[in-house]
Image 1 (cartoon, rainbow, N blue to C red):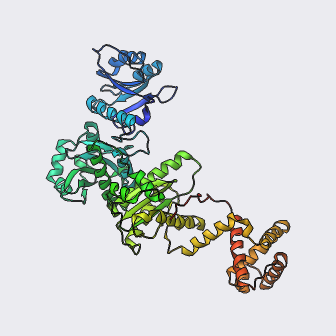
Image 2: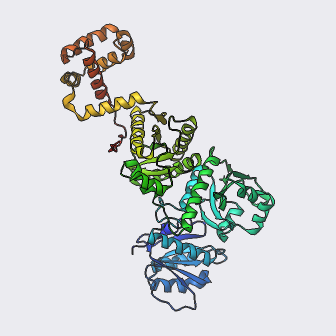
Image 3: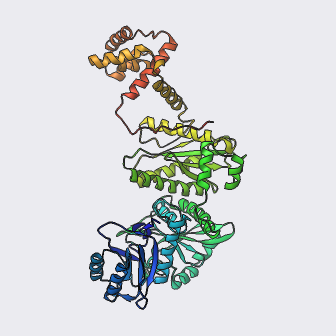
Amino acid sequence: MAGARLDLLLDGIEGTLADLPVVPASGCPSVVGLAILDPDDEFGDHHDELVLVIGARGRESLPFLRAAARSGAVAVAVKTGPSGAVSELASAATEAGVALLAVRPQVRWDRLGALLRERLEAWEFGAGAGPAPEPSGEGLFALAEATALVTGGIVSIEDTGNRVLAYSRSEGGVDELRRLSILGWQGPENYMAMLREWGVLDRLRAGEQVVRVEEHLELGVRPRLAIGIRAGARYLGTIWVQQRFDPVSVPFAAKAEDALVGAARLAAAEILRRRAGHGGAPAHDHLVELLTGRANTDLVAGRLGLDPAAAALVVAFDGPVEPDAPSRELHRDQVRDVVSMYATAYHRTALVGVVDGRVYAVLSGVAPDRVGPALLSWVRDVVDVIRSRTGLPWRAGVGSPVAALGGLSGARAEADRVLDALARSGSSASRVATISDLRAEVLLGELLDLLGQRPELRHPGVAALVEHDARRGGELVGSLLAYLDALGDVRVAAAALHVHPNTLRHRLRRARAVSGLTLEDPRERLSCHLQLVLVSRMSRPARAPVPARTRPAP
């Protein structure tokens, strides 16, 4: 078994419950198992294991650290002692060639051990319990990270007993309540009593609403947003979002409360999956089947809990092609998480997946005849959040509603066409559009794609103009295109080119002579116009290309 890479196994633990001051010179090791070593125990074979040294702290644990290394351990976890000094431990670990996990003195070994075992099991069996073996994986830890991203706060997810199920990473800025909750894996009872006294817990259990908790600096409590996690009338837990301060308070994101509603719905689904004894549901695979036209619609709809006869639509999200593959994957996963939260907040049964690098949201049971302003509003909110978080000009294309789930492959193709048209426009300001907004541009793009693929359809006269300009440094192509764009108005075209009308008339006569085109024929004029637009687009400075996609059969 290959094992879980140590740094991924410790994702969210390092910096909160423990530190990783030493990594072997050979690189971050993989861990295949967990062992607990008590000073009274006999040493066994611990090859490729992470060994927790209990019953000894600080310098007292040095001989056990060395013994664990000799027994084949790849990493050793020890408590640093009251002083927190790790220099001697670090030196010993470096000499022994093992990774050192320096555990905070207040951390309980049983809690840490249980968490690490759960993560190792999730890695081995792919069950999705706990954080995933990759940063892009699913689960409550990934959801906590995504919620922190969209709300701008520090997130923890708790069950009905206020036990911590997952939390986001935090680089400073945590208050006393957050610190104690993470260290003890449970909300401290004195703080929970105050929350009950303030009526916060009653409001969280009352319904699907975001509750604001005011600042109480004298108690070590920063402002918070919170929402109950519910499955129908059943209360499953709470999502808490602490306001950051670094070194001053950082406001929550503008749409944080909307995103939190979606996060609570996603958390409910994840908790119920875990209780049912299986991890990541196959919803993504079924969604891909629907979007690509490969599904038995009735069967897949039943598995997803959707009405196959209900109207549905597709929203597609895409960004620039990034040359760095890890960055591209990271941003795609961030976008998927953001879209999931906002789409689920807007439409409870929304499904989100990734196909060919694009992120798609499918909304079933929508109005069959139109795309409403409320839908466009949340899509714009999503794109704004994505752009602010990634710094990249992501866009969204909204397809028209289709009468039933069986038409989703065609709806996806339409959303893709809208996205392609947005990308061709080259405007970073254009971020969301429907087919109605860009129908002419979509049609033009399809025609130009056909012309680009079928050179035998093009008029040889246009190629002659291109060759003339390239050989003599002329401007016949641009001049003729401006004339056709201006509907044959010489003065308007000349003004656009910043030349005298007589200069343009001379160029047009020369263009006719070189190309042999008959511009008096409306059909030939249209054909010439399309080919000149294609030439113009092909000669523009290179931008990130619109990805080629195999459109599903309608």
